[in-house]
Length: 224
Image 1 (cartoon, rainbow, N blue to C red):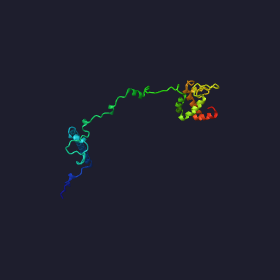
Image 2: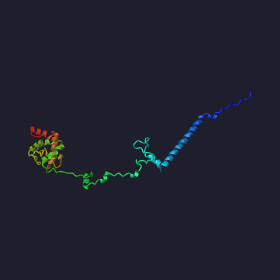
Image 3: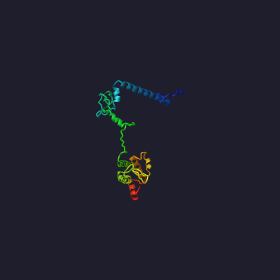
Image 4: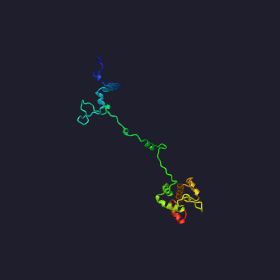
């Protein structure tokens, strides 16, 4: 028999390529597509820099329903939504209408040394009872304690800053024994009623707790 020719399929061109060959072709096609997309985007941005394309990119989202409020009809100019920066007005601070601070007020409110206004009062020549009323709060005593303090000092010295007991060395308004004890309140203890009363109130607070407690003790013992 004559030798038969080798069978060759007539649809060879329709066979699938080798997997690796197909993968390389896919990657190449994808790279071409990405490059084409980038070129198209860059071309669109370049074109938009001088034409209506840029306005359509920044004028805001486009709605698919032209009948809704806020949507612009086709072919209309874009809204002002921040595009025309030249028409913005400059904000003016409220401080522009404020007047300058008075120099005297500035010095008074200043925190620098010497800028504050203070008032001092010389209690040396004041009435001893007035001094005592002013000093009571410093030792935690209310004004209701003054009557008891007045009773004590009226009997002890008659509120005389130079009262000197001839039978003892007691001295001053509180009749400190000896009078030199009051030096702990100030070196002017011999002549200053405020110094003597400060010492006397400190003594009463430490020993009796309050002028009324001291007065109660004096009434029962004759001394305090």
